[in-house]
Image (cartoon, rainbow, N blue to C red):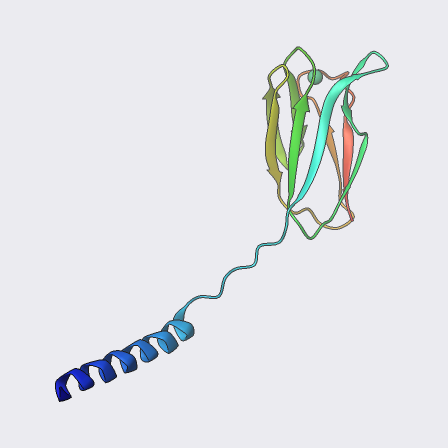
Length: 126
Ligand SMILES: [Cu+2]
């Protein structure tokens, strides 16, 4: 009977010790900043292939998920010189890519590397 009592006592002490040990040694959860999402659509505007909207304003403290939508029935390019390498979007393709944080007041230009006449747009980090 005494052995059983000791066993119960020991189990309780072990559980308590383990819990406080776990609390001290567990790494804190990393709080990831919410990402912002920007949709950039490729479509015909006044007879011209165009990435719309023409201007995007983003928060410089967050990375950005760009949702690229090619609504046209041909392959089109997407590029942000210095930030996003040229991508070829298939007809009617939607693709999500991540734009890393860009410094405040930076203005970057979206273009189609496949068609020089394709109207681009700009992103400004605030
Ligand atoms: Cu194009």
